[in-house]
Length: 396
Length: 238
Image (cartoon, rainbow over all chains, first blue to last red; front, side, top):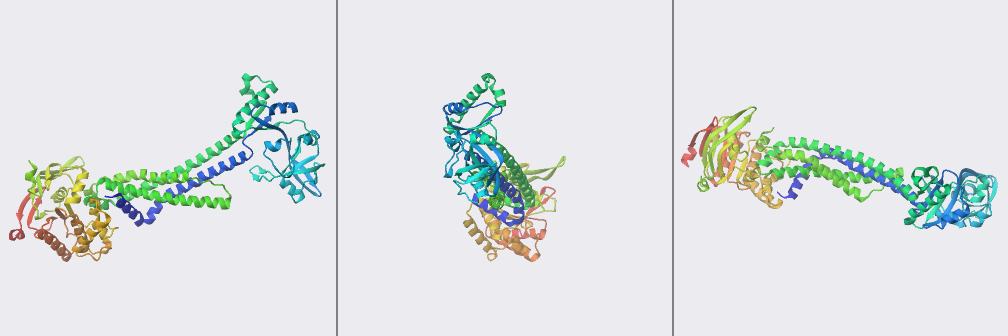
């Protein structure tokens, strides 16, 4: 018997038991659509996080000092001359500072640094200019403002040259930052950037515990990091032999790449877990197929006997039932893919969940559903093919 | 025994025995059966229920293998694999069952096409042949109907068409009129008789002597043995 004819017989059998076939498919449909949606959600979350982190610059290295150490301008010059290092910026930040212009007030965040900070953090100004070395040397009361902060207190972002007050002290606005959008950590546009020396004075602090370092390229991040560690070890007088156990209590050096790896490994393990749950539902779907196929074999005992009496071979019966199981699960898989896409569309449009569906997952899920059908079809099909035609014909 | 001598007969059964396992013991359904049937014969196998005639039919129809003895069908030893038996059933034997055994989900055209599909025909060729076979039994206008939409006599005619469609050497009818009223029964018997006149070998299994009288040769089975093998009136006059 030809394969195409077997397919026809199997399709006909699936079609003539529409409701039962659909109920059989249900497990597979739910399994496949949840695989697609859940894996898509995982991939979406992963992408969102990695986009955020790499938008900060993949060349960026963060140094945080746990124990205070004095790193003076000479030290900064020395560090920026090390191989692999392009620039270094000290940073002080403070939340909830009061800003005021005219009668409007607001609270915002101060980020204070030097001229290199723009490059290190990939900030650009949309109008005016960024902080210069002269501003830092002379402790000028100037600042660069984020668009949201500007809008909050001026009602416009066109504010270069205006005067505003930070914690009651008068500042001149020299530039407006280009909008960077909103991230999970809040708006990136609600901040003001001050020369670090000015900020030390108005915040009354001299300790700088955070430094941002830009590596020359992503490939040189590791080199830059090891030079930074060597420098810091010398600074703190740490014995090289004991680095691994003691450095953490003095300082931490983190690259964006290592942040990225940590973040994505978290979301990866989450999406693996989700896929596991979905795979279990597929397994249950497969068992459902086996169940119904077994019932179907018993129900069609007489038909099988008749087919055998008029010349169907064992392998023909086996193939007929296997193909039937594969068709049921294959159609279930297709419907599952469609529902998966629909579900992804709905949750993206209405719940703003980022879902990334890769075609690999769709193909794999569909192939898996057919394989599930074949595997769980084997036992019922084998049972059907082994029926003795005499017993089968006599079966009532 | 050489194969050439077996070729003289369409069916040659030597000392066939069939033993069934029943719980712990065994049950001999037929024993020591010797039988030869030539091409073109019209044979009735009769006997009360439990006499072993169904077992004999299963063996003749290659639905089952004998436990002991030999059975040559058209010169070929039937002691072979399941697959080979399926092929023999497909090509050489046409079954007609008491309860028709049509596949209720398929149209009668598809039912009659099925043996041809198992034989390797294309859909188109199978349907053409099945259609002309259905026309021969007078159902050419019903080909799209499902079996359940037909009367018992019509269903049995579909079964006959299905049995004939592969041009088998033997037509094996198991109580073909058992489920029919007497008028439809007569019709079916008439068709079988006509088929025999056309040269087909027909074996009919029945418990009803009146039906058996339609055949030319009457084989009686009792307690697993062939107790008589004789010509009927029809056989004698023919």
